[in-house]
Length: 383
Ligand SMILES: [Zn+2]
View 1 (cartoon, helix red, strand yellow):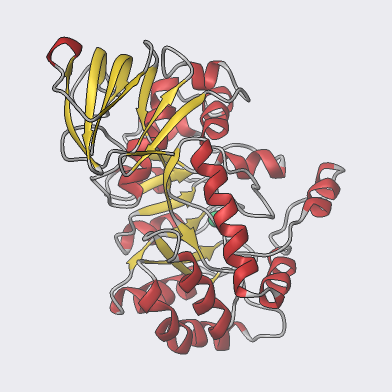
View 2 (view 1 turned 120 degrees about the vertical axis):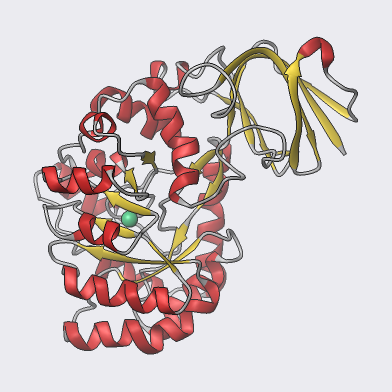
């Protein structure tokens, strides 16, 4: 089955074309099966089994949401309300979600996560990473990852989200690096740690990441969200694909990222929902750091599934240009997941794309809150 998308006014390729986004104008694209087969001038477009007329609209690679916590039960709307009434965010609410998650049946957890993935898809996201981290015991962490695997290949073992109440921190690290890792590794591509105030320190995080790497998992890290600390430099030290949050950075942190293959994944939904200062994306980009944008979708500190919302925040409040934000939400996310088959549109890439109800990528930040995603193609199939 081949599909011609004709009459594309602006195509974001992140590959071959003008500027950062590799823009091409007045082109057509052919998908064959789940792959992009051809991109070129409209008049040269080959025949295909089916045709979509983009009507001069912009077409983008599907968004790559490289950071999400979707396996959980319940929500924390009351906590959000209290925080907006003046209480600070401490991260302690993770334990509330842990209790609800442990009490939930498999089909409730999977149904909730699938609902959120569908919500993402409607907003143009075609690749999503899903973390565990609300089970925090051997059985419930392994269950979370087994369920996440039904929705994505990008699964992340985050047994080290917080130390559950009543556990000695050293004993818990031993559990995470031992029996819990053994149970979770078969369902996981990545290993992650929340390295921050109130969670795990640098030595604990290094021990957990190292144990995961020895089991064949790839490292990524929650780093420097709440305060400056060792997280970002640890991420660089262990060769992590991504250091996520990067809100509080020293000059040495920025320099370490700039000289590394580690992507800085910025999660402005978290700062929005906790009414906290945003990361300084301009400082990172100007230093040469590669940047991704993701939702951090979770019931406590960022309960959004919308990459367009994150793009708008990044442009308005993090001083990213619209092109930088769109690039970070597509090619940047792919880099943060070490993927070269998504986040860009070129022959051979996955046929994952969105047709906007707008003539250019600029409209994503220019028209915040407006549903501009007209059509989503995932694996070459219109959703
Ligand atoms: Zn997170």
